[in-house]
Length: 531
View 1 (cartoon, rainbow, N blue to C red):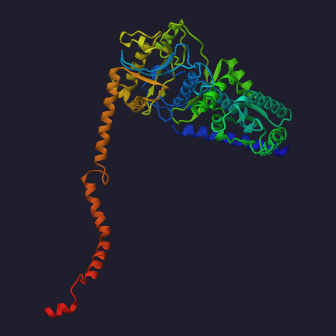
View 2 (cartoon, rainbow, N blue to C red; view 1 turned 45 degrees about the horizontal axis):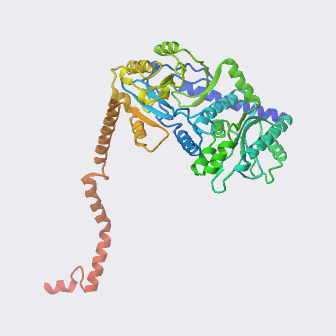
View 3 (cartoon, one colour; view 1 turned 120 degrees about the vertical axis):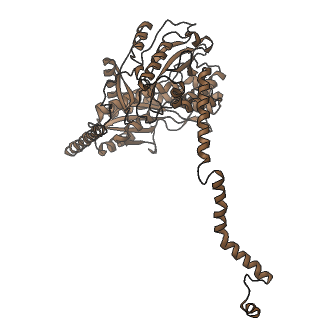
């Protein structure tokens, strides 16, 4: 018991020292704004568009969830071939509009609006990101310095299962997990906080490998990990070899990385669709419908309930100056009337308010609000407005109509904010320059069906002008580089080659002269006779 208390005290001292070191680093950096602990983030407003901040990577227009949207598109296309529709009724789309453009101009990324089906990776990513934020917040507030967070991985069944045994296999897997969870908690050796069942598909054998990724907590010290691992192996009789059981203590600096990996979206549907196995895919859609493969357990469930009672939720946020990704709290915002949203946006208020106008089967182009401004590669803040049920045929920006809500109004607010923060008149080329490369990259990816980029003629012309100017500057820079391009570099290369080959050429010349009976210099006797 004394050893346990001593280890616990040492771990608490180390955690406290790390917090002091990080706080000192933030104070010494002389920066303006940092994230302190789990503060409630104040909503960024449209008035901050154009403000200069530090860019630490992470944001690229059209990227981020692009990979998962492509996976979802593959799954939805395969589902349509077997008679299942995973799109919202009417093949509706969602659009992400860049705010701050001149009146009657637009630039947006449109992507299919999928149903809320977690077998689609892009849909599941929303919930898994929230779960990761909840788990990290729980670790930092309830676990760190008091207990140890660990990652447990083990097979759920004795062997791989086919699609015919998938349904029964999932049921048996969770039955075994619940029994193991209860036994471990009663023994006071550990407590499960999050459980996720994964079932990757192997096209060659048409089978699934069901295994668990579990986060659990136990007392500080490796001796408790060893006891918990021995107990888990002893109470898992279906694991004969015990080779697939891994229990790893997570170091403080690796907690976020482990959590993001252990809560990643399921790719099973995508793996089956990518293998083009329609028979297995259709059967999988039938047996996996309504199946929930994740569980929030124990103390984590209590933490989530506490946040819900406070009207708050967790959210990942990046420090503007250090680039450090932290989990913070934001206030939950319910639905508001259109007039209230418009007044808030005029004042540069909350960026995540959700507009809920009257909807129906014929409702199109509904403005849903705007997200928090994010830093572009040049360090200037940009904002985007979101439109659901987007239909380009009824979109009329020239008349300032075609969107229900205040999209055009917030676009003007963002443009005026850019002028104020830049301290100069608005210039479309300068406004688009930081993201021009990303936008043109999206235009070039014409074969991708997961999104579509639309732009007004003036915006597209400006983007092409920026690209042409950058291409000309790049060619000029290459032309003046020494030793690579231009006549000077080409002229120097033969001289270097000749100087290095001179000894070889002299030897070869002497060898030929020896064969023909000639020498490279007259003999001394000849010189004497001439005299």
